Image (cartoon, rainbow, N blue to C red; front, side):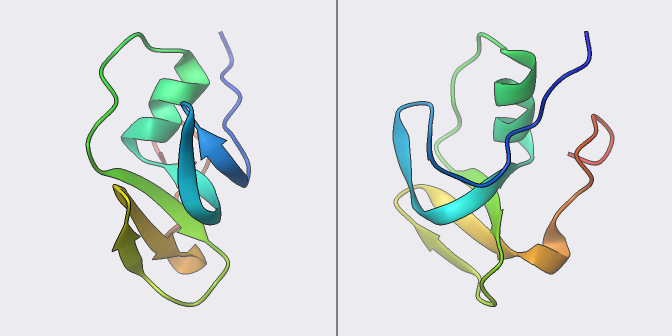
Length: 74
């Protein structure tokens, strides 16, 4: 199975992101592989905006923190 990683979005798992951003880390793996697991309380995403912050359960990082869209990079 070749996973498809999400691009920029505003909703993931019926949950609004604070802004349009690309899911990263564990939530990106859950989404890409369709894993039937509990969604973590704090989720990560990268944004093209040049600021990092935490809001509504999302940790938003800058684009320079964006991992490759691979199993290893995510």
